[in-house]
Length: 125
Image (cartoon, rainbow, N blue to C red; front, side, top):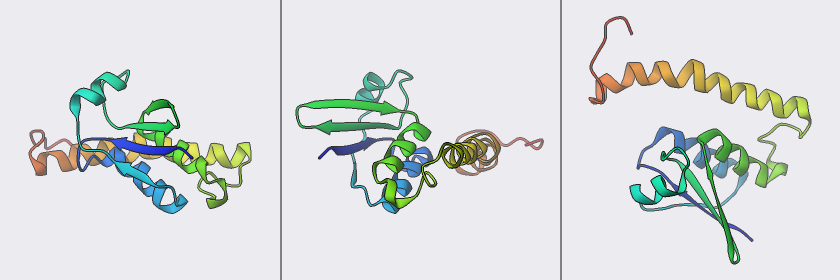
């Protein structure tokens, strides 16, 4: 049985997608201690999160928060996180993930990041 290890900056909101999917699907995903060099080396983009999957002597790494969350959701198809398994249901799940990426995450960052000091405040935002 494979083991799953999530590498991300502590508190990374993109990593939460995977952790929430894992919780609902009943998949054990360990959270690795933060190692920026490992993430940079393992991800083609150099960014977190990444998911390290080890199965016996073989291992692979996934990158991209949506791809990782989708993978974890598909491990236990009986949990229904990807719909009923049909192309249409899976596409609807994908559409909502894309909606969140483009319509919620970016505006939320623009509104919240100034409050926590990650970027300057802009009245227009």
